[in-house]
Image: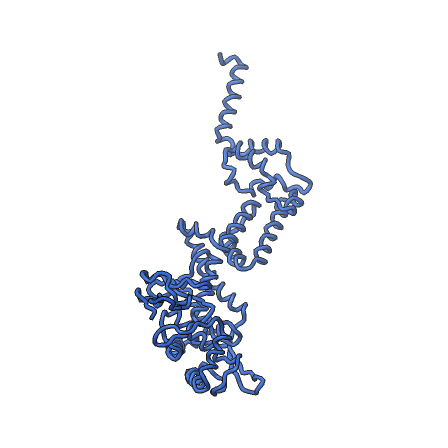
Length: 405
């Protein structure tokens, strides 16, 4: 008989030839934090005792009092298994779910391949696997109903139309979204809030429809775009917190601004505004980043807007900007001249300070004329090269009038 030395819900064989499904086979039975690493499994950061656990699986394990006895690869196999249990067991399962208000089909002993009971049982089995329990079929169904009936999440049919999403599926969605958008796992508080709000929205979408046999069937659900919008809502909340912390000088938050798709959008837009000399408030930049991070079309639209503004401010560069160059690239010689003459750091010079160079649509100001104008700038008088230049002039005058040896 299989055993579980570290008491984490995963097992190892104790005798030769004993087969244990990969979904419950322990990767290290001496460490309660190391569970199954079955193919297709996704780690669950919210699992009890810190166990990586299973967040999503591709099949179902059926237990009896001695451990796992059957492993089913998909819902089709689960349907075949349930049919094999007989009419009495099928009716009993339907009655349990019907009494909890989770099944509204005919309560009889027949089961078709599209019967919603298959999805209900599938999520119950998934629940007991995630919870690291070895409940048999009746126990898994009873426990899933007991834990989740108040939220309407127990044993519904996953992501299919007319369903209430179970917490494991909602958590997996949130974790994937946070890692993609922000480059880090979602906090438990965000997972809980998303799960609760999603279920409330799904439960509010109740409508009656007729199946082909004339039986009333209740359907629930939200559209895919609504799910995406809800996920992005929580991502944006945490992104806003990250921006505020970075603006306040938090070094960790400043580093995190560059992570994930949000980081890509933030860096892309911030650099584009700076490289093209376009002034923008932090609040406006933040708003554009939030909308662009989750929508590539929006990011392209904002980049096009920056190019349009750049062509308005620097009309002499219009054709080059259309060719893909930034204003900073095009005005690099002028930028370097300013840095040398006014003794400024070329990397920190605001490009909009050079707008007079390209204000004439007919062409750029002559570089020599620009350098002359820089020496007429009051800032130049306080530079070392200005003082050196004036010292040389004074020395020459002194020599001219015989005041120097």
